[in-house]
Image 1 (cartoon, helix red, strand yellow):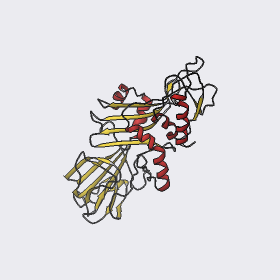
Image 2 (cartoon, rainbow, N blue to C red; image 1 turned 90 degrees about the vertical axis):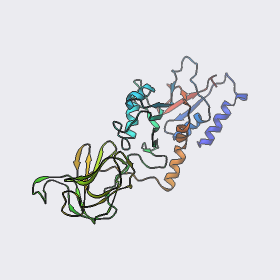
Image 3 (tube, rainbow, N blue to C red; image 1 turned 30 degrees about the vertical axis):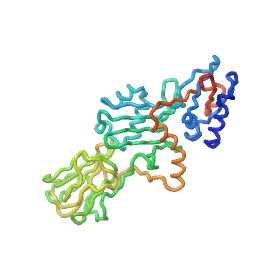
Image 4 (cartoon, rainbow, N blue to C red; image 1 turned 135 degrees about the horizontal axis):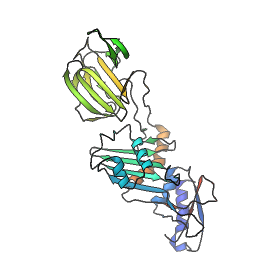
Length: 346
């Protein structure tokens, strides 16, 4: 049923001049329906409540919005706002490629969650986050859940920012690959070469391979020369050595594709090149073969369908007041149905 038809049907049923308080009826909604069809009920200000019939089970909140402010850790702040532990974990998981929650959160940052509790069990487990938002001083992160179960930005870019394998603005020759037991060309010592060397002219542009935060931006290191270290979410760290120029500062946030520096020949170097390192969960890996997060943004008709389906979620996140939908679960209905009943609460 199209969303507008569903809305009109509900409007006729709940139109006060024609509503009988003694009338009883049931509306069935499939859980598998797009969120837009269900959420349109809430947005139209039609409030559902459980039947007073003593034979019906107690009502529970199907959709609920939580808002809060960071004071201390995310966990303590979210628990104070009434968010359950499973939802806190899911919230952190959604943004794990964007934020390192142990380092990037600041007092005064705010969060908001729109949750669907229809799949919760008696212990409170289950349920999904339909939309999530984190307000920071200079940035707002928003995620919406789509029908494929994945989370996207409102613009249709999948969360878990894609990682480019090559940070250079032009192709270069690999002069030395990842090798845990390489003989150093200058010192002659056998030691790990935890990265990939590209032989490129001095001044070749270097671009951030993924969104991140600059952890170190140093000059004149005896071995690394001018170098940059970047944290890309909670799992990834990248390093760029022997640079000629830095275009970023420590603590600066960068987006994928931002210019961060230019290649050089500084430090302990045999010639102009970029030494590029990648660490996953603290372990050095081969940047050329490591599994990296991928995800192309939605385009064309797929993007149009996405925006149409998720628009109600974005609208809900933009509302200030908390809205809930009270429903009762009919014991006689199949597991994949929810039964909504009217009451005198309108």
